[in-house]
Image (cartoon, rainbow over all chains, first blue to last red):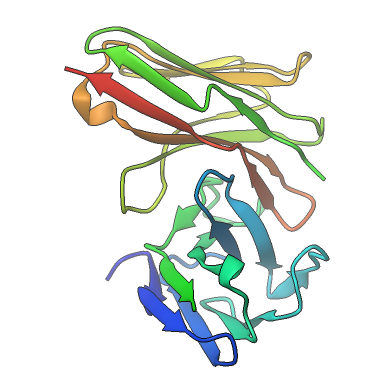
Length: 117
Length: 113
């Protein structure tokens, strides 16, 4: 099994739909992240859960809602999205400094390609 | 928050030549600087990293340098090969804010055979 697994890999939804992206990590990490990757833009950090606590990110619209039920699973709930939300959504995990093992590396999943019609 | 700038956005080199990508950061609290390579349609993967207590690190054809005073770090690829063609991202990590990573805008490297 790969380190960080994301489902679905591709998702097409209408602006009125509600869907969720799922991420699971098998690396024993204690921090998980959602990043948005759009064409010609930097990787945008959306949400961070560190030691199962959410680090607030006020710049993310409320139509995106994260959920982290435990240190291995992370969800991104989507509702009433806009076409400009179409992008690749990457999940990642890492180990918080001071906790073993600590290489500091950020491990990415393959991403979920979202298209909003 | 942290602001990471990366240059150039595109880079083309002849096979065998060297490639250099430069990044600057703004927050002196950043202490870990990884570089990621993303091939088309694939996930970003770590290729080399450097911590703030080190000035230079090398791994075969890849090296990274860090100047803490000037807040900039660079990726150097020597003897480039066609398989080095990809998008490269620099990042800065602030460990005491939920272990957040901030990325540069990426450099699309093309190695011409």
